[in-house]
Length: 148
Image (cartoon, rainbow, N blue to C red):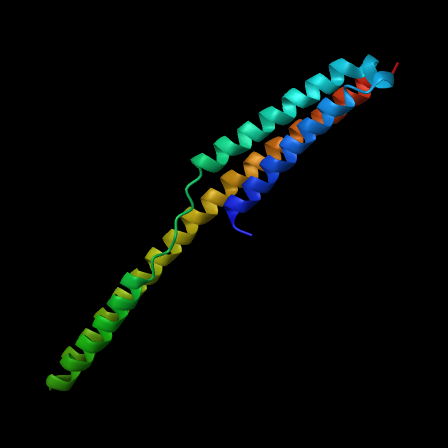
């Protein structure tokens, strides 16, 4: 399931929950709890909007591997040609060392990509943690208001 699909699922669940609260608020024997159901309907709709906004604001960076493959191919081909033409072993070793440095820089850029992705996932987790806290507050609201 993609990140977008997760957000879409949660939005659908919140909207469904809002509809549920609205429907049970119309049951005659539960009319005394109408304010609770109205409150919960509004909050479920608000959660759906909050999640939709979060989904729209989150940009998950994709890793484009084409430049990586191109760079790898160029390094290998160029290095092979240079080694075959070079008679000085010190220069060959320097060229090999430089190629390793370039590959290391490439790996560093991949690591950076995943750090950005991790930061984005942390933001998503924070959004769901906030929703968790709000749901517990809703539980407490229902428990406090429903007694009596």
